[in-house]
Length: 171
Image (cartoon, rainbow, N blue to C red; front, side):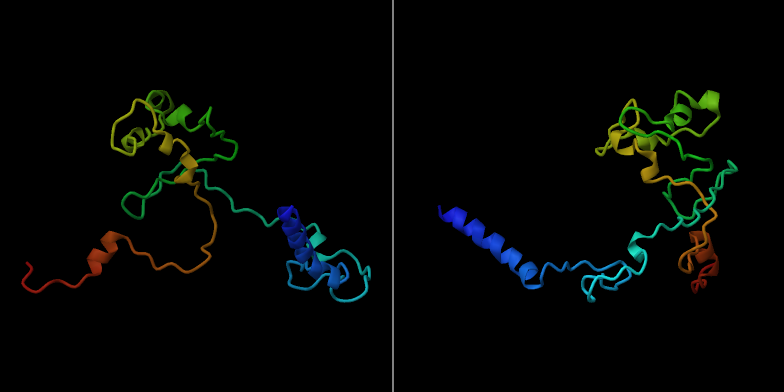
């Protein structure tokens, strides 16, 4: 009995703000402007920005020239140099392995999956790709012609070494 009273009291407490505001919702549009119910009487002045259908921004073009890209740092996952838009990768099928599996590379001429992909988290070598390395696009991404969002002053290791000052006494 007391639990029913407690639940009823909680429901009533949660409903009080809505009852006091006369049923006005607290919804605010994505542009930060309050909806019509918060700014006065409901006036239909056309579609609200949140309900407008706008065309999606153009996506960046994938670079699909099959040219292997140089890696910028040790252990960087290689970029994918071909289109993968319709590749199926799920629990039952991995389209990437039709070319990159060790049994298929001779016929496809694709690079074989790294031997690290055949190890479990304890370092034990497996006969097939490890489940934790099965979903290729977690690490490997296609190259696109996207412009950088922010500036980048990255220098690879060789560039850092070539500009490092020589130590005294070094020959």
